[in-house]
Image 1 (cartoon, protein in one colour):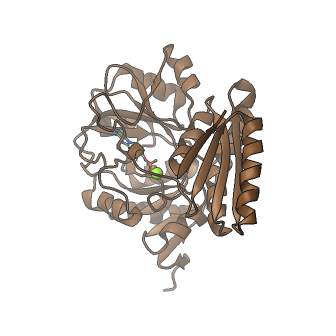
Image 2: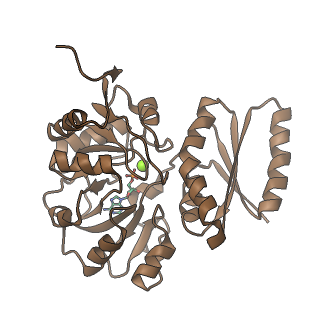
Length: 341
Ligand code: AMP
Ligand code: MG
């Protein structure tokens, strides 16, 4: 019998029809890897209770084994399948922000395998706001552990084409849907110690969380007071295109003046220069602009690779709303950061 679905280098391309999603769910249940869309970025999923399957995620991505994964569930009722001693605050936040781009770090339940949490006794969990993702989790009948579906270190994928660029032939299937509308990953909020702390800024803003909880929320530095990385993933360079990226930050007008001069100097030397303008602004009036910049960020970084630029000059500032996440990703992608005063 001929195969119903196409393949690229052996990776199945599955659409969002019921037979295709049934196939994707069967692959997950059988210990395989399926890349699927979420409202943040594409995820690379495996059954969260299957050590062998989860280990395959690390191998396919080339991800360091000490960088834990986020577990995706299809309803807040499944929280107790993956976490224990869940504080009321977690239920309150789930009621307000799920489905959505907020991952909560909680005490891990036994059923989640140690590989998912990279040996930590906590687990990050979220319910994504994407119909295809939710259908897949329901059909698979198991929580799905999923990091972003890119090769480690590269910009995260916001389309199935990006997933294929990085992982075709290394994973069993990709669901060919789109709709990663937010464009940057979820906010990781640690609720496992006495005060909530943002370990990674993302799709749900600090301001939204502060409004919901009526308290100030800290955004963690990379290390805690004992010098241990509080969120292991944050210690690695990330989100990087192949060309070196110089990030200019600070006053917009001054940045534009300086970067124009520098870009011209590089061009005179015969270099192909890519310029990215990611000024998100610092107040409420910048809300829509920063959402758009976030939505395009990884696609634009990947475009730089496709255009074979020699050097990328990014200009950016912003600490409001999703602007904080954009700055966080650009800082991690940068080979050099220059503050222009
Ligand atoms: P990714 O899924 O590739 O977007 O990466 C997941 C992010 O969540 C990484 O920065 C991880 O370090 C972080 N993370 C996942 N689980 C935990 C956890 N249990 N404690 C702290 N950070 C976590
Ligand atoms: Mg990632």
